Every structure is written in C-alpha cells, then in structure tokens.
Amino acid sequence: MMNRRTLFTSTVATAVSATPIAKALARDVAKADGLELDVEPRGSRGLFERLPSLNAESGLDFHTGYRVWMYKSLHRSALKQAFKLLRENGLKPTDDLPIDDAVALFTSDPTIALDLHNWERTQEIMWREIKAVYDKNADLYLEELASAEKQGPGSLELKPDIFIPDYAKYEIHIQPGGYVGDRFSGYIYYHGQNVVFPNGNYQDNLQVSWSRAMPRPADGKVQRVLDQGCSDGQFSMVLKRMFPDAEVWGDDIAAPMLRFAHMRTVEHNMNINYVQGLSEESQFPDGYFDLVTNNLLVHEMPADKVRDLAKEAFRVLRPGGVFYPLDSYTGDQPRNTALSKYDAWRNYRWNHEVWWMEYYDLDIAQAMRDAGFEVDENGPAGRTDTTRNVIGYKRA
Image (cartoon, rainbow, N blue to C red; front, side):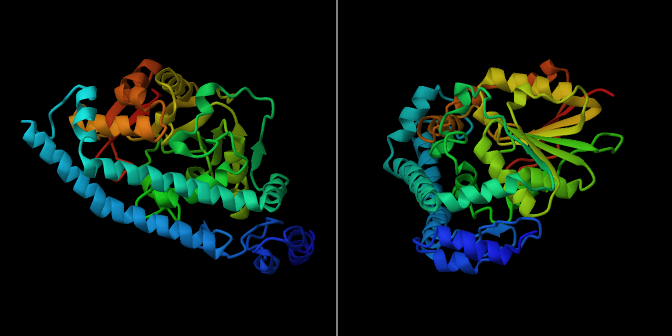
C-alpha cells in the first residue's frame, strides 16, 4: 500500500494549496489503518471528526451553544406562555383543539413566535455554513469519498440509474439539497446534528442511547441486522458494535449519505454493507434478517409508504424476527392536545417536514398489525423522552 504520509503531502496538499487550510492538510496523517485518504486536518475527538478549520468549528460551536440556551431558556419561556394562553382560554394542557384553532392561538404570542423564529433561522444558518466548508474544498472531500469506495471492510453498492421518487427529494428539515440533492449531504447532516439535537451528538451518543433497549428475537439469535433508511450510517455502526458477529446492512435511497456512511465505516474498520434503494422496496430475500430497525425514518415518508415499509420489514424478517422502529410517535409522546398539534404543524410548515401531518395521524402500531406483526405497544423505550416503544414480532 502506498505510504499514506507521502500520498497526503504530495497529492492532496498540492491539490488544495490555495485554500486556507493547506498547511494543516499537509500535516494530516490518517488515523485509521485501512483508509488511504482520510481528511481530518484538525484531527478528531473520539468518534467525532472535527470540522476542517477553526473558523468553521467555532461558528458551529456558537450555534450549538445558542440552541442549548434556546432549549433551556427561550423554549421554556415559550412553553410557559403556551400554558398561560390555554388557561386564559379555559383549557388544560391535555385538552384538544382543532388544529387551525391551536395554530391561531399559539402563533399570536410574540414569545412563541420568537422561539419559532430562532429555531428555524439558526438551523438555516448552520446548514449554510457547513455546506460552504465542503463546497470550498470539494475536490479534496470528493477524493476522500472516492478513495473509501475502493476499500473495505464492508461494501457499498450504488445504483446510478435508480429511480428516486419525488417524496425522497424534499429538503427535509431545510437541509440544502435534502439527502439526495447535494454531494456532501452526509457531511452536512453529520455535523448539523450537533446543532439540531440538544447538547449535540458528538460521539454518536444519541444512536447509542436508542440502541440500549433494542429487543432480540426470543431465541436470542441475531445473525443478520437491517438498518432501514440508514442515512449517514451512525446507527448502523452502533448496531455493528452491539452485534459484532452479525452481518449488518444499511439501505437508503440517498447515494451521498451512503458514500459518507461507507467512508466513515471504513475509517473505523467496521464490516458493514450499504446498498442504495428504497427501504419499502428492498431487494433482500424473504426471511433474511433476524432484526430490522430504523430511527427517525418514518416521519420522512408518506403514510402509505410507511405501511409499505412495515410490510417489507415483515417480508425480510425470518419467523421469530423482530421489527423495532424508532421515531417521534412510536412511543408514548403526547398526541391530540392543542400544543402537540401546534408542534406538529410548525415542523410541517417551517421545518420542511412535508409528511409530518400524515405521520401525526398515522397509527404505526395498526400499520404493523396490518403487515402481519404481533405488536407490543409497551415494549422498552429506545428514546429518552418516552417510557415505552412499539415492537413488532413475526410469529415463529
């Protein structure tokens, strides 16, 4: 194998010699044994790959800190105002309202409006700033992705001529280009989580927490695992650590996300297989998997596609297999209250979650029953904001 220091200093640094980070890039030596070209000019913190410049990282750190303040201060003030409005209108927090009335009630308050404005604007700025970093050094990062595609462990199967339905092309949570429309979607999503999620997600800690309650088949056998809609592969990597001897697969329609997922997987020397395709129309054999799971996928699909997703999970699971979807309404999150309807509406209207209202009205447990599963609606909770989660069992 070519000497990696020579590769980096002669080829890569020369290619980016006009950029502000050229000297740092020239000093970078990849840390992972298997990856010939690994662009981490400022190193990493544990699992987290730092942004390539101090300017970019400090800007993102500011947005992250600001969002933490928002969650702890501004958002709480907005909730207090919401409860006050309910009381003034003779309503309790658990009372329902038609959605139009709920929206009209809460959007009339300046504190609630300020909370919404800050929530969206910080997200838009964050996406724009991360995208600019990778666009500025496009050749280098495209080379990093291309280098990883030629390596293992694990595999990456992309299908350049695959049909991508319109529902998958939206700029979900206002991420520029969405998952399929920007060549650096994986990088953008990976770094953006640290602003979007309270207190960040620097060590894949959210995916780790979601996995702790992962159910197993009754016979305890987990030889093959599928992560539906795996996006940037963080959950797939957690699943591989949880089941190190299992064959782990991740599927997704978005090639840019899969390329990033595979690159990061190779860097960490993990044997995971990624394949491009619709999770609700996978090409896996009948009864192939012991465990099928997903996280934060269902709300990004139309309701009819979610039903197809459950049917596909049932088809590819062996008898005795387990289906464990994790999302905002797969547990015991509040539903059918004035405030929950407003929250759903603001995600739909302002966060570009175009299928959120369909998801809000979807009975995921019934969709799983219709697919053939025996459903436990009181399974162990994968998310910290719930006490339970729905689980589907395929009869042995």
